[in-house]
Image 1 (cartoon, rainbow, N blue to C red):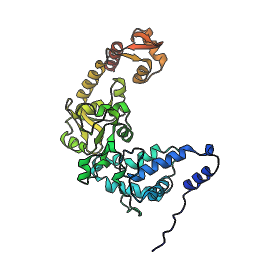
Image 2 (image 1 turned 90 degrees about the vertical axis):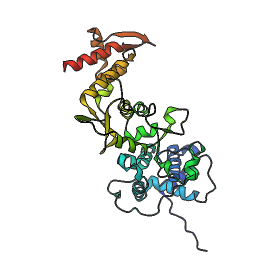
Image 3 (image 1 turned 45 degrees about the vertical axis):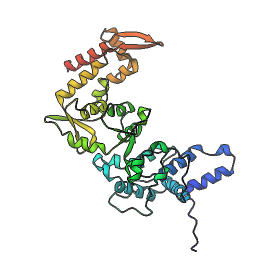
Image 4 (image 1 turned 60 degrees about the vertical axis):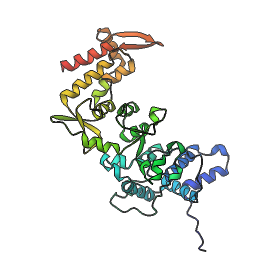
Length: 339
């Protein structure tokens, strides 16, 4: 028999052993949490969704996953290889852009608690460069029962890797949770194995291909991005606009260059949609923070508008002043007309 050789001990592993050898209270818990996260990611390297592993299947490669976890935290070459393989294994979402293709790597980086010890720009391999071995395995046994789908498993499909939750979608796109929830409202996309909580619903990203192909760019349209200030000012979100476009309540289309991260809409249609959204909130009472954020102003500016009888205060709740929604809406519309 060929003797197996022990792998090199990583710096993270060495520090953990040293910490465990001393007083337990001295052990850095954030480092342990990073290792646990990395183990989960190593088990499903091309997925966006990972759950804590409570029951390990009867596989023989557990030590290999742990070793990969340490390397994911430390090795630029391992991370470069992983990023390169994401481009190979996640080809079905190339049409959505690099952020979605490389989402497993980027989300792992965002969720690591301690300082990132992964790839630096100068050591990262380009996606065209063949990545160094070993290849990352895809171990479906590590998916929790709540996520399992017998139809997917029976067909041997790798569809799990294209699933996102509202939370992960928000992180990939940089949207707020509110905007991401609005994106999927109604029957805009089919929820995969719908669950109790809206933020936990899972969607297959490949559904967007049909939507982008079907909804063409309208004539005389402008391109609208999620960070457009008009959304906050009109008390709505980019996700709500995307939802209305997908459900064809508004005639618009998505960008073939930027995927679902920008929308083409006729300027007059966009302005009408914003006004409609604004007056849906006319009966609401708005918190002071909502008003200052929407108008991009200070609390003192709002107080000045109240003194000038432009904005009207509603009854305070728990000692917190609130602004009547109708007066806010009218102020926004009049301001736009003056300009």
